[in-house]
Image 1 (cartoon, rainbow, N blue to C red):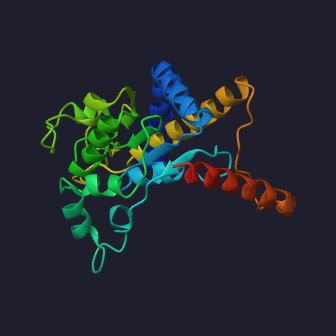
Image 2: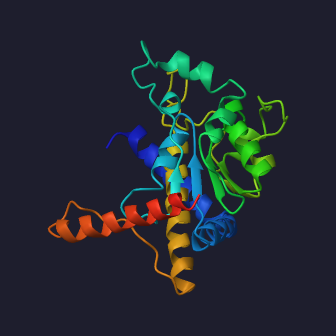
Length: 255
């Protein structure tokens, strides 16, 4: 393995350990909020823009995740990988900075004060992310923010509310990822390489999901857990997952 690759893995491991050492109580509070919503037949909406959307999408329907998490996925917020042409990076950069677009996104969903909103955002300061955060708070939902306090606290809000995600959320989980995200310096490269915010955010999300499942079990209820169909027990897995989808549909019909 190259030296820089080894340093990258060391950096990710160190940052995950920092989260494990310092964010346990916040992750527990987040899981309590999520479990409360799910046990009350409500939903846990997850949201992120750009690379933050990856963590939001991982929350369901992913192997090992609990039915009741409900990602909000806007194609204009995630499909900019071609960079140029239709739906490219410049369009994304424009849209996620437009205040009011997040309000329109929320208007397309039936929200309940008993729901929870879980937002993943490394910087926690852009307009659409904060539209979602402000809208969730106005609805009376519990707001969880997975964000980088070192980055966010050093950069002003880009929303008229004047606040950043960590200043709005009821529960804040700090990824600890430094400002700028990329963590590895290479001599004469000019800029650092090796972003870590996505890996850390996804790990935090899965920890919340697993802790939520544990709380549901401890309450005496069954968590509807997604299982992998890519095994020799495919038929059983498909049956379990179809049951999970039916449970999600039941919750949606109650809206």
